[in-house]
Length: 100
Image 1 (cartoon, rainbow, N blue to C red):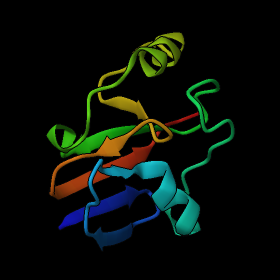
Image 2 (tube, rainbow, N blue to C red; image 1 turned 120 degrees about the vertical axis):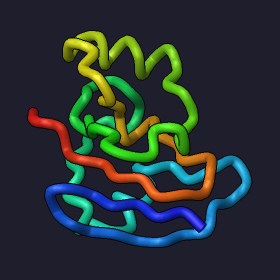
Image 3 (spheres, rainbow, N blue to C red; image 1 turned 180 degrees about the vertical axis):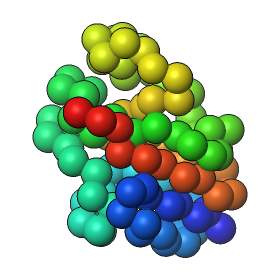
């Protein structure tokens, strides 16, 4: 099972991972209580930036498009785009909405 915690909202949920993993933005679609803002859904705008505070090893590594957008925002440590973030291993992860 996979457990995701979203800060500062304090929203938490436990889900079963499907083959191919769990896209964090799909969780945000289904649960507005995550309070993760998003717009383009395709690694273009950077609106959905989150910091992975715990569980970084549970996610697939960032792709080229995600890295390019993150570079525009200063490539801060632990920042990822929720629209590109895919949880591929069971465990507990904590995400914090990045300052916009």
